Length: 104
Image 1 (cartoon, rainbow, N blue to C red):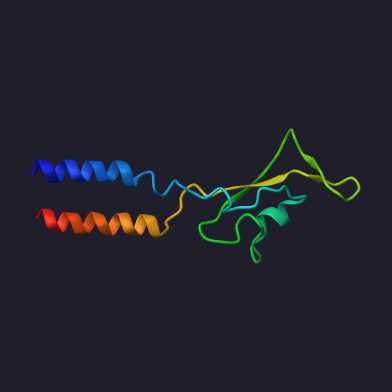
Image 2 (image 1 turned 180 degrees about the vertical axis):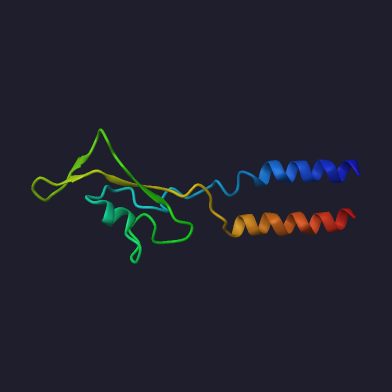
């Protein structure tokens, strides 16, 4: 019983970090000129939210980058999603189930 409680506590602690590990190249790092380019609209996704789980767009208030077009400032940037359910989380979850079955 004690081994099972320790195992579940250890797994919950370690597995809680897996969904928050989002790759750094998951969303573009460049700036965009309009919110439509970055975030899209209801029918067409933008550069920040074109895949699942979706990132989101935010507007830079202080340090906008000069765009190549005249008078164009690129103030919209992408932020990564807060979580990502990938194969590592699935592996960890099924490993948890497998070891729990062996502990019973």
